[in-house]
Every structure is written in C-alpha cells, then in structure tokens.
Length: 273
Length: 186
Image 1 (tube, chains in turn cyan, red):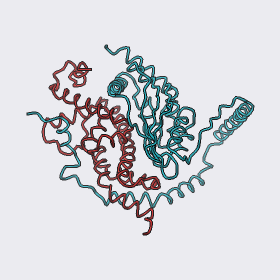
Image 2 (cartoon, rainbow over the protein chains, first blue to last red):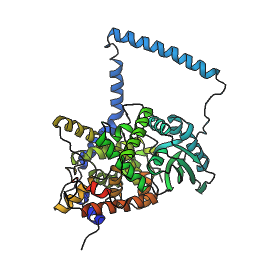
Image 3 (cartoon, one colour):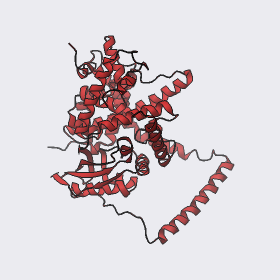
Image 4 (tube, rainbow over the protein chains, first blue to last red):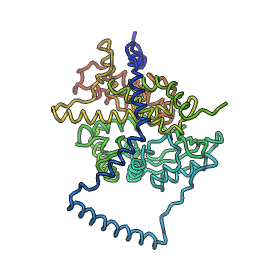
C-alpha cells in the first residue's frame, strides 16, 4: 500500500516534533527590547549623526558641492520645463478616504497604471495585505512599478464591480502580462479581484477572488528561474524586484526588466519543444 | 465596558497567536533564528498595530507579516551560502535544511529533498496547506493568487512529487529527478 505524498509530507511537520519547544523568554526579551528601545535608539542614532558631520575630506566636500550645484541647476531647468508645458502629465488620482470600495478599486487601478509609488501607498491602510506590487517601503514599490511598466504590464478596471458589503467590492480587472505572453502565448487575462476598505476609508486588502489557471505559467517561470541560476551570473533575485525582498536591485528596474526579457528569449530559444 | 488600549489589544494578539507564528517560523528558518524571527514579526505587528484586523483575520495578517520576515531571513542565508560557495568552490544548491529536526528514514529524507528542490512559491503553498493547515481560500489571500490557481498548483505539486519519488535516485541520465520529470506529462 502506498501513502499519498501529501499525507507523508504533512507528517514531517517539524513543529509537531515532541522536542519542538519555543523559548518564550528569548522572544519576550527581544520583542520588549525592540518595542521599548526603538524610540531611544532612534534618538541616539540621530544625535550620533548630528555629531559626525566634519569627518569628510575637503576635496570630497568640494566635489559634493559641485555636484549639488549642478543638481540645483538641472532641477531649476526641469521645473521651468514642467511649468511651461501646457500638456502637463500630472495625474489626478482620487484620494482616500473612499466612501465605497468600488471608488477605491478604480483609484487603485488608476494609480497602478499612471501613478507614482507615493500615489499607490497613499491609498493603502497601514498593514495592507495583498498584491506584491506594494513593497514594504515606497522605494521598493517604486522599483516594482517601474519594472512592471518596463515589461509592459497594464491593468484596466472593467465596468463590473459588485459591492458585496459596504466595505468590500469584487471587480473584474483586465490585465496584460507580456511575460505570460512570452511563456504561454497568452498575455491578456481577466481576474476577479476583491478590494476591501478599512473603517477609515483606506484600502485594507486586495485579493484575487477568481482568475485563470496559472499552473502552467508558474511551472515555466520556475524552470526559467532554475535556468537563469544555472546559465548566467545572475539569479532571479538580481532581475526581479519582487524576488529581491530586500528591495535593492543592483541595476535600475528598467535595465533589470530589459535583461529579464532578453534572458526569457534565450531560455525559450534553447528549450526543446 | 472600557475600550481596550493598544497595549491590551496587542498583548491579546501576541498571546493568542504567538504559538502559530512560532510554528510558522520554525518550519521555515534555521532553528537558531526562530525566536528572533518571531520577535521581529510581533515588533512589526506592534508598529502597525492600528491596522491589525481582529478575529480570524488577525492570524492571516500575521502570516503576511511573517512571510516578509522569513523572506528576509532566507535572503540573508542565501547570500551567506553564496559567499561560502565562493570561498570553498563547492556548488551546493537546494540542500535539505540542516535544521529539519528528525528524519526517521531514507524515504522521508528523499521526500524532503524533493520538496527542497521545488521553487520557493511551491514550497510555501505546500507548507501553508499541509503544515499550517489553511483552507484554500485563506492560502489564496495570503499569497495573492486566486483559489483556483492555488488548487491547481497544489494538484501539480502533488503529481510532480509523486513522479519524482517514483524515479529511483541516480537512475536518470543526469542523475537528477528534475531532468526525469521534464519529459513527463507537460
């Protein structure tokens, strides 16, 4: 008789081992030190920074000053161009608090397509749970949206939202995923997404309610990741800000996206079938 | 009835869910770092306590926080391992984690090795389903996929593992279970 592989794996749960015992004293000590010490540590660090400003070499200061001057000049030129441009690209994204989850969904999709990372974060409640486009910091979200745009991801809210409660709305979203197109030949899809509001009118979570079967796509992505690891000096961590969870790509998101796409083409070209 | 203060609410969150979060971390990070990871999860929860949902949602929310903490721990381990690989010039990848506590026999070790060879998302789905014992809908919310996708992906993982386990180690041309399964039923 053979036992199902899932049943066998479930039985290997390390947390179910008799000697798996937490050390709550250690957890409590670290947690309390973190909670109680955070304000003090921050103050100390700031004080420390204030006392450190004069260690730089003079040539370096002069160089920094020259660069700063150039930046100021360039910024001035940029402001001049922006203010004299009558076809300004400023995007007007509705701001929270939202009265209905459907309004929030529309603002969210607009922010994903046209907004900045700040625009996207501004819609979200603290502790938002949902898509990995939202990084832990604005800088990381910025990397992700720039990467998405460089590979051609776009989303559109279809006119189909159904409010399932005063704080929850489920909407159809058409998504174009060119990378999926490269892997499977299908880049357009429709996902059913649920958007929820917190009591203050901010988006607390978004989740996929229903969507296409992505099993084949995930398999190919995993195979591609292993191929990149084996055949280049790079890893998926270096090429995709979502995989790089500390949010520090060593190249620009645009360069990473370009390299990512080029490697997909190489991968597909060498792949049998 | 007095409204609970932040401290009391947070204390309750911690007391109610710390065991589940400890188990979650134990299943994913080296044993020596589990307590630190749990403390970090609740430190993040403390900073974001205004956003913490109540009731059943709270644990899912904490799993979301824990997932990020574990990723960072894992990421630093990968970096460290790469450094070790460079130093000793040994190409070691996807080992069964040294901290898996008790492996009773060769079959179990083989199964753990095959699971370790799955990609990170697949391993996470497997653990959420079989070790955290979350329903499909909750897994879907935690990982940001549709329930249908999660279900289908789990079915593929089951098939993949069963197929790999059916191939005796070293019996393929490349000596690799992955190579053997790629000509399968795709």
